[in-house]
Length: 451
Ligand SMILES: [Zn+2]
Ligand SMILES: [Zn+2]
Image (tube, rainbow, N blue to C red; front, side):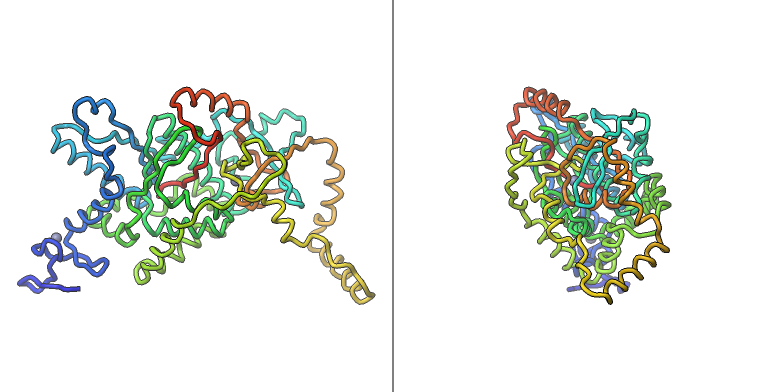
């Protein structure tokens, strides 16, 4: 770092060479306003296309809407501040004109109630995972509607693991974000993810068995949601978490921050178990790296961005979408049959007992197991008894969702499944609406709650 000093001996900002430097990042000394400009420029670089520029003449009517996903987490707050300043600047320079309209969505703070997730055109289904990794919809003939959860909190309260809750919440947020884009007619959606948050997402997705989503999650580009096209941009993707904190500090924004993101839903989740979620563990890992090993963060993001969609395995059965199946919980593409794969790697049958020594050991084990958990041995019989009464119907789920509902207890997970008929009607309707011609199914997007 080449540093000059003021008369009083303070280090001078390396950009303007006038003001006193208040911080050093990426080996460069910044004053407050040069640093704010430095971060804002990163946003402008990633949102530099004509559609964000001020419109004149006939184009004024073509002004489009941009959805900002606000979580009141640190980075989404920085993004909101930068975008508001950009719009203010546009309006002052261009006499009240602006390049785009901003729509802000915040789910937790009830700009949009999270329970609206349950009010779409869905069929509630009870989904259960069996020992052979078969996933089924269970219909037991009773009037299920009354039993189904009325709020998202109720829906998630069945999960025994925090990570399952986190994973399902992620799916819910994602659905609500894209759904809002469509209902508000926003063709651009921006997330405040810092480079660190993107790195956390890449590792967490990989650990959760959702590696096939990494590419769509971390690269910017067009996503299709129910035939509706949305450009997803992460304007702060080149900004480190430590820089986000500095920006909040220097611009006095920390006070608006929901520091721990402890909102109603997340608090409720914390009560469920004390265990940390996969997301939290990964976040903690990167928190320890951020300052001294920022290259690691950028390397993870660079590698994640280079990953492409996996090659689809040929499915000979149940193919109703040009060979592509979609998960009925998260709506992602299923590239590989997870059930067949799980069965291949799992040993279900015990090794046969061959001598007396082994037999005696087995008897001892059985006795001990019975004392610890008498339910375990009765489980098989119970299931046999129940058989015949409820109707089962196979359902396609991705590997990540199989893992997640593995953390849901015996009776299964109640989940709003988009019904085929409604979906088809919806697709047709939207086709005539905008004449887009993509692959004809459901979403192939996935993105996460803003942060
Ligand atoms: Zn300066
Ligand atoms: Zn899924």
